[in-house]
Image (tube, rainbow, N blue to C red; front, side):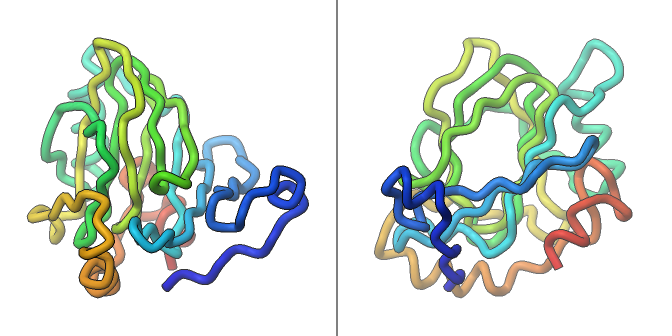
Length: 195
């Protein structure tokens, strides 16, 4: 189980419990935003932060193909082009990267008590295994490229279900760390931030 984040002044002022407040770290140019979500008893989330890259430079007019090339070059083979499901779900046996190829959406990360995040073309979200996510609303042209580390291609999509929580925690504990960041490679942010 993930440790609960300490109460902050903001959570006290807003009257939020620690599990309902996603803590974002300051962003350095070229570095991802860091979002933390606690286990809420239904969605396990992770002790590892979600990495949110904004406006990743993608050469050419076909952003989906550019994202696929980027993820492939950084050892996260792309698996699909689609959107994001409209129900809360997570992957207990795989880390996932979502690259927004076109359009925009409002996603909820971290489960029902999580945080709404606006994403647009060029944004990339790296989700540690167990992190809840769903599409709250999106433009008609919203398209995402999804990818996973090579040893995590047979991922499970788990809906929010209290009965699945204990087994999900067991699976999450067995997921190996990726060897590289899907956006910035082996020397990128993920290997250091997820150790």
